[in-house]
Length: 404
Ligand SMILES: *Cc1c(COP(=O)(O)O)cnc(C)c1O
Image 1 (tube, rainbow, N blue to C red):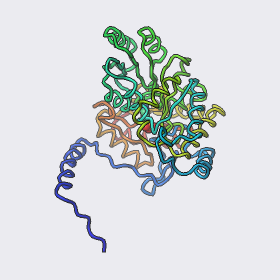
Image 2 (image 1 turned 180 degrees about the vertical axis):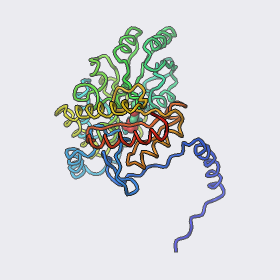
Image 3 (image 1 turned 135 degrees about the horizontal axis):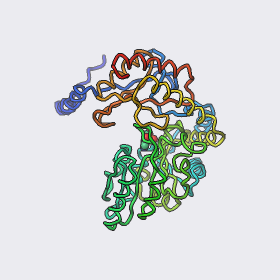
Image 4 (image 1 turned 180 degrees about the horizontal axis):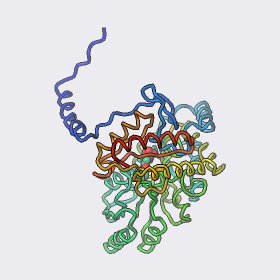
């Protein structure tokens, strides 16, 4: 017989205390169970035994199930083993890891690249290690949480500017310059993850250059989406050589997991010696690295998947607009359906789920209060029929909630 697990009073007290926080979330309609997929992440997923059309993933090009990536993973695991067993500075760098970084640098037209465990780890590891007391970070107010966390880790001064507001960014840059900071880094998402708008990178780079500031772009949602062969925001605006740090993730359009920074060799050497997420955490399994290399092969081989992504994006956005939904200021495949307060977004998500569509409601603190939404992302691998079924479900659920 298996004994019932018993817990001490101290363990129970912690649970009781934490549960008060959870109760507050439940009261605000923000408590969300994890949705468990019983299938691969694909345009159609299985949840609770039901087939649903997913508009929730960041799997822009469907590369996570691309045969070339899966084959590369299998081969690499056999040849190189399941894991590397060490942090890279001690014993965990294999030629495969170095090859991926050479390929990323070549793809992004930079001198060097360094990979991290995730996009999150890059932002925390780069900002946290590069800036110190006497430096200043100038940051868009709606930058990703991982950038905000990176900023929290530095002793550098921080000046926020209004979202995508170039004049306000200039005000911030000027203020930083006046105070005589050593390093000034302007940081922005390339494509903003909740609204799908594109940063005005050309103007920001020009102003930053004027004030002697370096620019860092987080292209988590732009790589594989914008620029030639999906090279990202820097390529989209023709700014090669003028963006010091091109951050990206291997977890979204690339279809695997990880993050990277493409930069000068000096930045790479600096990070290898100073960046704590790099120094104190083990390297990616070889299979992950090999799949990422295969993904770059796919991107470099042609534009076809990216073209399909944009055709699907236009079709879906046009449909939502024609139905009378507010889709905010999106310019990319990220399309929010604005709902106002969080409970409405959660209700819309639930009604969509009943109608066979998986699209998550998002509320505070991920987005501002009063700006709750159902966020959708179409991918290159959705069929027009699937998108039309999703639009029908939105039409019906949106009418029920008075959103259109
Ligand atoms: C998703 C995202 C990240 C984090 O990337 P992961 O690889 O998932 O950790 C970082 N920055 C932005 C802008 C993102 O959207």
